[in-house]
Length: 297
Image (cartoon, rainbow, N blue to C red; front, side):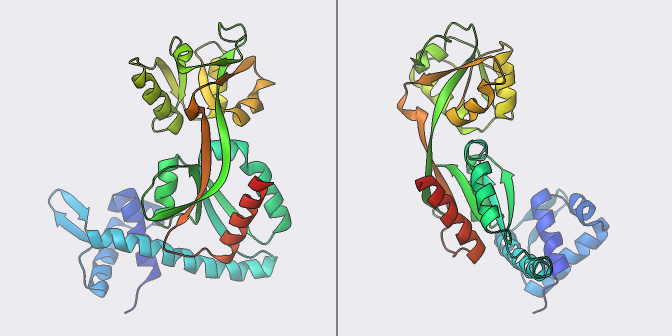
């Protein structure tokens, strides 16, 4: 069986983008050439990958299985080429990491700096995602390692203890809550809230906590970063909730006050996420060991 690596790359692009046109644009080939490669791939594998109709193409279960396998194969092939290039320039190995914004803003800058200082031969590729997407990326072999909020993400991934963080309330200086040391969720619900983007774990937690009180969260606006959240809060457009370590980054630069939350859910655990049925590469294991050692220290 001769599998063409280019056809596998094109197939993965079709699965990721959802259309032949978008996959062709990514790889700079005509849609007709993409269709031909998909048909040849089905002939080689002797299994239909798409159910075709006048409404378009729908992936079959075999297509989803091949997508995950192909990602792993492509990554291994890229790893071989990368390692050979790396030998020439003195670096060896690559780790694909996906992490939520809490880990990225609070812990990873220093931890990755010390790791890369000790292991300059390793190339770490980092991407931000929400926790549910982190688990999915690791399960589907789109990433080697994830960092996310502790929880239940299914049997395809395994979680390792990492760190704890604390959610706090940020308010503008002069706000009615600015002189308080701690508040509960009830005090927060009396004010407009600047929230994170849809799907964020903090928004979901605040919405649940409000519902348990029989109230609605006064979500005035949603932003995509802690930086934007703090800017909006400092401008007096609402109050916000984010990890204490992240809030501390902006307190000196913006007119903000940090107020503790007395709720039990304000204390959170972060975990490292790896695939349950596969061992880590040597460089990925090196990074996992370093992150856990830094957390314990």
